[in-house]
Length: 162
Image (cartoon, rainbow, N blue to C red; front, side, top):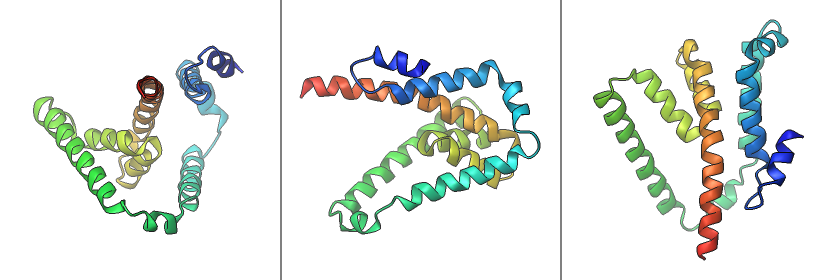
């Protein structure tokens, strides 16, 4: 309800999901101990199970025929590859060489920036970096909270230019 009230005051774009995400993140910061206790025993198992359901749902919605019939698939993949390579180079040079940050944290932050919190958490778990799973989720979620409204605003600005 609160997110809908805030979103209705923003008329440039549909802001319901970004507002709900921001409120949920704020709620998690304000009352983390209460929500940790609400899961009872086995929150790691429940989280792992739900992540697998999420990945399955994303994969099930893929139309492989449409993807393969797209004529510009190779240039698109090349463009995305270049973006990811440049991203990786910047993260490595700035993060590791200039700031001296931990490579595990850099890899997970990069993963969260590209794939979101679920892929970063899955990577942290798969690599055995259990101490970094919650940080990965938080970094990815903060990226969504900051990036989504900024992207929507940029899109609305570009729309006025056309």
